[in-house]
Length: 260
Image (cartoon, rainbow, N blue to C red; front, side):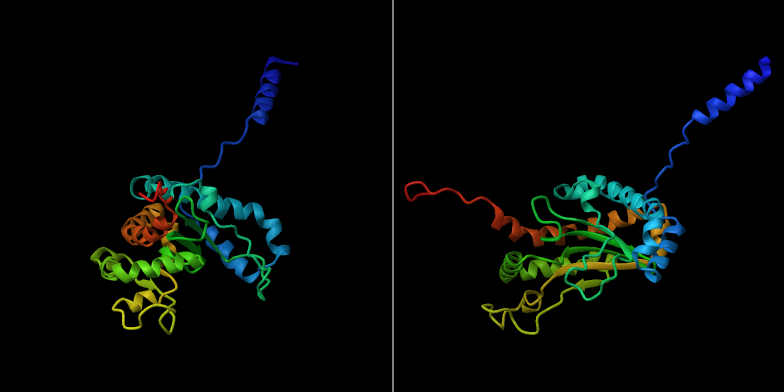
């Protein structure tokens, strides 16, 4: 074998042994991600999804985790009690169909939720965003408070409704968010005075802010920065809603000989 042949053979072997360069995951989406979500809405079944799961992970799951990590890093400065591993903030793509008449197995959006440390994943007040094929929704507040938390927030509003209303009407909130979530009762909750000046807030079953943005927002390199900006503005509202919940969870002082 000639020297040139040996050299060429060695080059081929080394080339085959080299691993491909790792793909850099960026904290925003490519158009292929939206195409996948549109197709998933049309073919929401396991037969279609399973062979395309690697595509879902590459186009949607991994970029979502990158976005969540970047947002979480920023939250160290303004919401440190909500910092958690990205995998715990990310919602699964699989729907829970056990108690639903809708048996479609997959969600048609990708979403993340940051809950306060020590609270169940969807309870208390926290931060949220999702992306589907048509829009981006960024939200913050208490959307699924547990029964006790619902009562705690309502009792807190008896004395703090004016303070909370000012937060909702602040210039920054009105410029950034377009919706106030309420899902209110038609009547005052049992045990609450019907003529209370804060009854419009007390009747709510959820409290929060939401903004709907064009889906193209998710394709821009500054997508994570947009989420961070919205979360910062919503932080006083989130903190206010968690105040009565945290107070109820605080350990009670022990009584010694009838004295505190």
